[in-house]
Figure 1 (tube, rainbow, N blue to C red):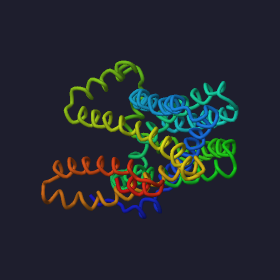
Figure 2 (cartoon, rainbow, N blue to C red):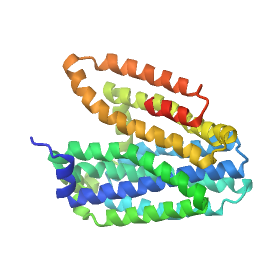
Figure 3 (cartoon, helix red, strand yellow):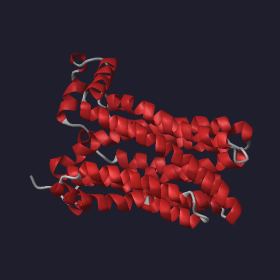
Figure 4 (tube, one colour):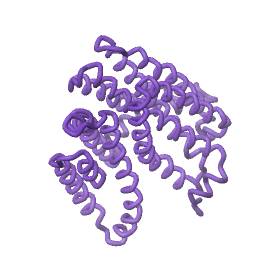
Length: 338
């Protein structure tokens, strides 16, 4: 079977272009919100590590908990409608942050972040389920790679722009931009025809609801498969372990950039944090490009396990060395390479 190139898929598939555009817009808005939200919590809480930790918990935990539920949910309902309505809901939620003015209003930031993360889980579930339907078998490889790899590039661009916008125009402008991004994302999804977002098997099951198991039955079956299938369980455990480190990076970047180096080097806290996330995003994006080439070599040599093990060790060592760096930019360089 002939696989489409990135250019062929983007040029020749209008529906996929619209979905990809929606991801670009909403992901940029997400990083505007993240940088501005973390900065606002830092400001009104007087750089409380507890407040920052709660903010990051509200961002990470709901997504992890709701993703399995969202995966089952989007197979029972219109994926297009799920994406549109979750985007519209996030428009309203993004504007909630405008009402955070002091420490007594921090609960609004926590609730808003929890809701954004929850709606984001459902949007991502519908988007990931829709992608193969839009690309077809010939474009699946290119489409999946584009959807996932561009997220790291958007992390770099979005965090950089978010830090700049928060520093120059203030947090309120960044939150308004975030709300507008969700509205624009909803519009791009609305341009995709309903029938293009689902496969025939899903359409048949939706038409004959009486013949399919209940929502809770499907959810239990999915969880049972995950814990009994060796490969699926391994992937799940790897993601859980990796998420522990990812959660730690949230607070490390916030404290190192927004508090430590902002204090000793005079950086604007939001720009300092944005620099670290930009370095991380560029490193992940560049690393994926290198990994694609490396994988071809490892396939020939049969050394995937050996390579992954050493790569993880070196990754950790480089990040540890970053903690010894005397300047923000040197820290960012080691975070990028790591």
